[in-house]
Length: 82
Image 1 (cartoon, one colour):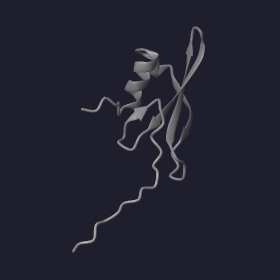
Image 2 (cartoon, helix red, strand yellow):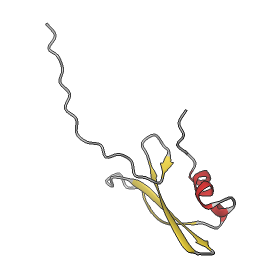
Image 3 (cartoon, helix red, strand yellow):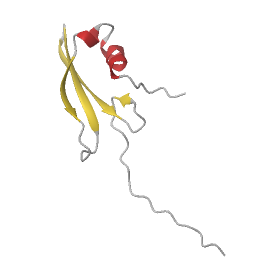
């Protein structure tokens, strides 16, 4: 079973605390196909100051605080059928 979270709201509550999703707001996001990564920046006011966390969307639909791995070109060799 995957440990990655698919719900951004649940992930924000996990990082900022229960009920924080109602006080947090999205300040930046990217959803362009040309961009390498899709991300959402969530900010919340804390007693110690403003906190911003960037969540990245991975190819499997999950949200994580680290960017997805860069897809590198791969060379595959096929064996000749005799």
